[in-house]
Amino acid sequence: MAGRAASRPVVVVAVNGGTDEAAATALALAHAKADALLIVCGDPQQINSVLGAGV
Image 1 (cartoon, helix red, strand yellow):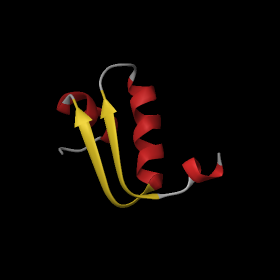
Image 2 (cartoon, rainbow, N blue to C red; image 1 turned 90 degrees about the vertical axis):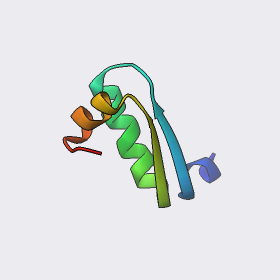
Image 3 (cartoon, rainbow, N blue to C red; image 1 turned 60 degrees about the vertical axis):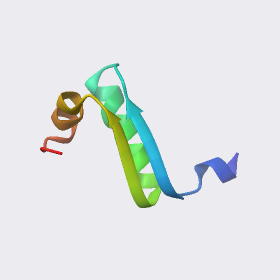
Image 4 (cartoon, one colour; image 1 turned 90 degrees about the horizontal axis):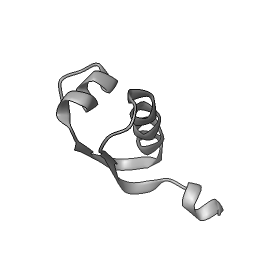
């Protein structure tokens, strides 16, 4: 499905468990697809550890 691979103006990703590696992969893919806005939902501690920053 080529349409699904296309970028989107807004992307929402939920980080709700799993390994940090899986979260990092999901965040990287979501960031690559988001044209204007990326909304990340989930445990702030896990998200911060994956991103290496205070969000």
